[in-house]
Image (tube, rainbow over all chains, first blue to last red; front, side, top):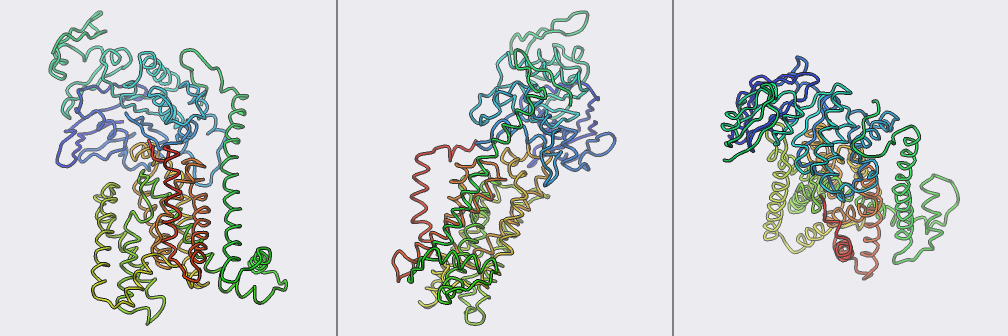
Length: 255
Length: 369
């Protein structure tokens, strides 16, 4: 997947400006940057949910926007930051929605659909909640339900927009472990917007650093993060611990 | 897909045994909506028979049911000609017209509430009813009822569809329809149509004014089989089409972006939902005039009972909407007999207190996210 000179403007505001990016098959790509840098927009454009105002996004050499919605959804999953749902749907209802791109009109519920839904709920640890309305769940439980819905989609590339922002530290670890485990086992590609630089260092292969709609840096996670970059992009003084030249930990000192 | 790893502690399920268990639970979850649908169908059958039997001449229920069944199934059994005339020629067309209108408004109301994710939405929200009213009133104003009885319904239908076209064009930029804009445009165009109608009041005689007011309050009196024949096809296409879009409506409840991520062709779905709803609502409104509250209240009641899944919600709303309007019309005919009330007044007078009672009891009705 490759973005070429992508720009995105709404109502005269430029959100992305000439962004070149590529996603390598099977990698764990982290997108970092301060609030308002355009992380979510870049993810939506890369995932084919928003049409860039200039430039293009290619999926295996073809423009992504040429792909019908259903076919795109079998390849690309997207978990948004604050997923919403009308009241009353149960966990099973919501996770089953992940099978939408596989089912034609009038087509029954097949064993493959059932298995995918069960496996997705088991993997995210929400099987025991399946009859509960999603609106009754805690933030962390909800987050995992929506992750399960994306897993039921069985995509090859999974986009996660700050998937751990509302979770306690245990679920943060579980979600990140789960995602990187899925990636290793099924060869999925994961693209994740994330605020926590230490988690980013620990889990991501590569980092793309966005600042005000432009790519400030991009490269292997351990080499791209340094004190200067953090100072320019986030405006924070920091100390990056290194182990043999590779960044392993970021400590924030002051603004 | 192979088995996924499970996090942390627990739950080695998802083996074949767990799978069949899960399927059993999924089947159990089907029982309730199926039972409710059957119940609503029974209610509708009872409503049809009761509403056909009760009137200035009271008919026995059994005989009424017999006439309806024999005629509907085309059996050649002998029937009492008086009963047959009253049931088949006079009362049943009106009862069925009420049913079709109630069904159309309730299904479209449920679909609009889902599309706009707004509990206040109703079939009127696109301005279709007001546009239809304006078309009809202009037709009445120009004296068309004297030329041909079908001109006014025709004008109403044209007004309804024209309103959708205007509202849709206002809210669509570059192939994307903004629902918030659509909502505002619908409300604004409705108000404008209302103002034009009010303006016309100044220029008509009392007799015409009465006709207009009657039309605006909804009117099922004197509906015959021809009215049904005209109204039923667009209502069937509209409501059937909406039902086929149930899954898309379900996914849209989670927001457009998430629906798109799950593979829903969002813009195409929105367009079709609006066109189909306008078709059904427009057809209903153009034959009977504006009947409020059915499309707002019935889906909420059904949602409390059957849940938010549009695959069940839409047909169940249709059935209950049909019964509701049939019974409301019965009340309109009989409450102050021989004076007939406008059906629209009864739906509001009878439906709203019940709705408010539910609202007070079940706050879940307004907790939409």
